[in-house]
Amino acid sequence: MKLLASLASPYTRKVRVVLVEKKIEFDLDLVDVAPIDNAVNAHNPLGKIPTLILDDGTPLYDSRVIVEFLDSASPISRLIPDEKRDRVAVRRWEALADGVVDAGILVRSESLRDKKERSKPWTDKQVARMHRGMEQLANDLGDKGFCHADRYSLADIALGCCTGWLDFRKPGDVDWCARYATLAQHCLRNKHQRQRERRRHRLHPQDLQVHRRRTVRAGDDDAREEEDLDRVALEQPPDQARGEKAVVEALIRGERLRGRSILGRGAEHPHAARLVPEKHLQHQEVHM
Image (cartoon, rainbow, N blue to C red; front, side):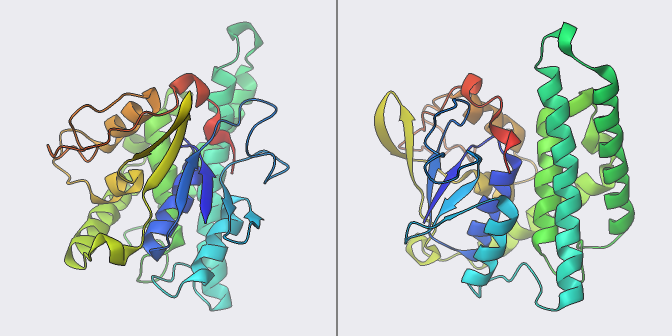
């Protein structure tokens, strides 16, 4: 299957994390949906990302539909409970985390307008929504180890993607992770726990069946290999100087990471990725 995506999109990241957790083989095709006519339109009439194209050509959208399909496609690492009440509780976490991101994207989009055209009341309204959402998420989390029940689920993934994007973009010029430190710490703790579990159960790459062949269009068709970005988010050591945010920013700027692994561990990476420039990705996170 193929995922049409943008690295800047928190909704894409949610789908990618689920794909990695489920150990499902996939191709990642980075696309630019800014033009009216773009490659996504043929598969998704809304022209939004992420869009997942199944092996039989069937397209799935949006991110919530995609992750539900993926969770049922493989018995590995069930992320959405079967029991109705538990299932609704996890999806409620996802809806609230996604809703905070929705408001944040509106704030960011407004900030990209000409100063004379910006509406402060509109921005303030969205920022207030974000604060209410984050406060509710923090209250619901409390001192629990996981968002729901006693296991890692889609709720934790959605919260992690939410806080990660807020820390990356800082919509409204708010340091969201400092303001809601308990949520940020929860996501960091889960990230390191998943890192340890992956190392403990690490298999041969062929056994993991996570396809890391990427096709990036930057002039000529240029097929290259790159490390999976979600592995940066999930496996990078806490004391790593080259943090996740720096890696994401470098990727979005389209840097060629010469002679370095994007995991930042000093290992040589044979194929540094050439990615789409930031100007083509400014609005790429706005799609679910």
